[in-house]
Image (tube, rainbow, N blue to C red; front, side, top):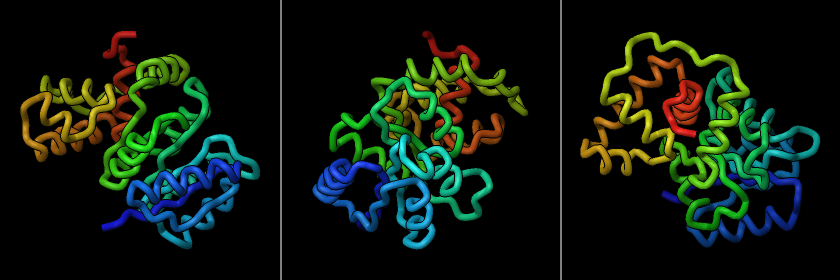
Amino acid sequence: MTLRVLVADDQDLVRTGLRLILEAEGFEVVGEAPNGRRAVELARTLRPDVCLLDVRMPVMDGIEATRRIAGPDVVDPIPVVVITTFDLDELVHGALKAGARGFLLKDAGPAMLAAAIRAAASGEALIAPSVTARLLARFADLGPPPRTPSEPITEREEEVLLTVARGLTNQEIAAELHISLSTVKTHLASLMHKLDARNRVEIALWAYETKRIAR
């Protein structure tokens, strides 16, 4: 099935470039938005499989647009991937907290862009490996104290937690830990329950907040 994508960026040239890249990778771009408000309107009308949003946009920025498209109060959320020029931008942290399933830099390349969209559509998340450690570590220091798990985290869940924090996909986690894909999904569901996390990005952030990842 061809995935349907909505693209939002305030620069015409960037939107055109993203459309060309996505179409070459086999996606269908169903709409383009020059600002966050229009992105929200189109997302609600067109119901794409994934929304690709720039962080810095006029009228409504990517953070607020993400919150309205994929936030915790949205009844039928749509997966959002944030794309930005700034690898140390606090706005990216806000977007992840607002419900985005991952983020990329604009120089990530077609293959990683395609992988991030497919991961978001399948319920996973892809965080650009080149910025994962620096970005999540910095934002963990800026945020509130980490939450306490509702139940103890098992040894295997700890292993899964660390691989998620490194940005691995479910398939990569299964291969590295020598467990089945269904087992990975079971551990992720358990971690989300224990950490009151909405997605794997929040699981990764918690790993940094609790200093489980070396700086």
